[in-house]
Each structure stands twice: as structure tokens, then as C-alpha cells.
Length: 306
Image (cartoon, rainbow, N blue to C red; front, side):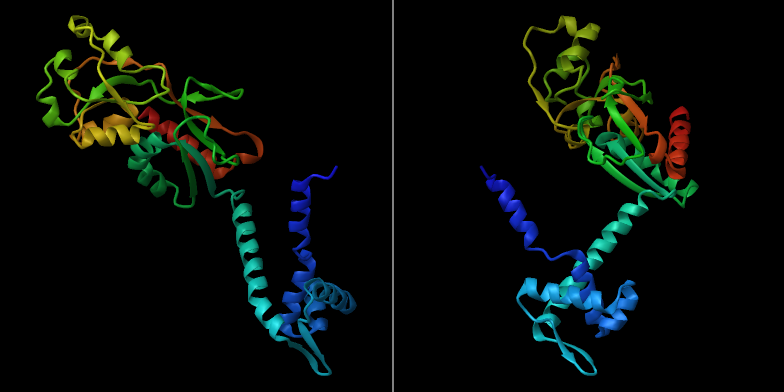
């Protein structure tokens, strides 16, 4: 019994002429000579002529007038040529891009989105100034399972330290704490005041507002009413809510310290809870390790130490 999906795929492939036929057409149409095209393509003149004939038969259209003094494009050939040339140009550009990613000066980095925004971006100018020869290709994600770039030489992920048998090098030892605008913090003197505000957090993390409240001594005096917590998929969103004065976000050092240092956010209460999760560096070995990746890794560890 035939597979209809396979038939559809086979039919789709059959509608596309062989690539060497199209290359022979493009070269012949550009120089208007089978002989000159054959020299360019390192083929015989008869082979080029046969490929053009095969393409014309497949299309059901004549692409050239064969004149005594050379070739002339038919109206169909003249209309087809720009499309073929554009397709080859796109293939060449994409191929060059893929080959370039293996170059020693290209860094393929896959980074957690919040880390890239709140930690890396404020420091990125220092890296670019120190290593002006490195070309950055950065892909971002929210959770460790999102891996948009399989070719990444380096990955910065958030979690507990192990992903698909890959062990990461721990970069951070953060704590969890509430943050909000200075104006809102002026109204928060204790946990009771805190619980009167809108609370923001993320789903899927090992620790939450419940964890922070359980660890905070002042929380024991609070009534049994469980606060409503609004959740966002990333700290980039929950901290933006906090920056707008909408409520109090549960944050950690890596994402919040820069905002606190600039006075945009403050910690309304001093208690911090040691964080179980952290940011980790995963460095691929072998063919993916190049000069750019080595430079970034050394710089990153130096910045983390500083």
C-alpha cells in the first residue's frame, strides 16, 4: 500500500529540476555560450548542451534560440533567469553564513534570556572593546529545554547543574528577595504590608514566594490567607512589572543587582533566601571550541570573579 504523504513528497521533489541543470542554464544564459559556460563549469560543451536540453524538456519550454553566432534567450528563458540567479545567490549566502560559523572569530552563544538582558548586556561593551575581532551570534531562551542553536559553542543555562548528561560550570550563588520601586517600598514596613501588594513570580522554579515567606521570620505572624501571585514566564517580564510600580517581584542577584545599583528598584525587606538554582556555563568540546569561544569563556569567568 502506497503512502500518500510519501507520494506528495516525491511529487514535490520531482517538480524541481536537478541543480546541475539549473547551474548550466544560469552560466549559459549569463555568457550566451555553451562553450564559455562549459569552461566556467569545468565541463564539456556537449554535457552543458545536454543538461540544457534536459531542463527544457522538463519545463516544456525552450529557453534558448540556437543561432549560428551564439545563443539568444527566449522570452521564457529571459523571465526564468532572474529567479534562478536569485535562488543561487540565496544558497551561496546561506552556505557562506554556515561556513562562517565555524570560523575562529565567530562565537555561537546560547544564553538564558534573563541572564542575557540583565547581566550580560550591561557588561557586553567591555567584552567588545577587549575582543573587537569576535563576531557574536547570540540565541536566547527562557528555560533550559529550549535550545534554538545546536551549534552553540557555549551555553549559559539556568537550573540545578545537569542537562542531558552535560554538566555545567556553576557561575552564580544567588539569593532570592523581593524588589519594587522606591515609592512602593516606602509603604512596606513588614511582611503584613508586603502581602497587601501585588506579588510577581515565575512558574517552574524550585523556590517561590511560599519558600521566601516560610524562610522569613516575620512571616510567622501573618494570617493564614494565601496571597495571590501573578506569574510571568521570565524575569524580564516580572521585573518590568515591578519597574512600572505594579507590585513586588521576587528576584535574585543576577537579574536585580544592576537595577538596584541604579536606584530603579529597591529591596523593601532585608531577608534573602539562598537560591537552589543557579546559572551554569556549558562549554562544548572538540570542533565547536574556537578562539572566540575560548576568549569569551575566559572573559566571562573573570567578570564573574570580579
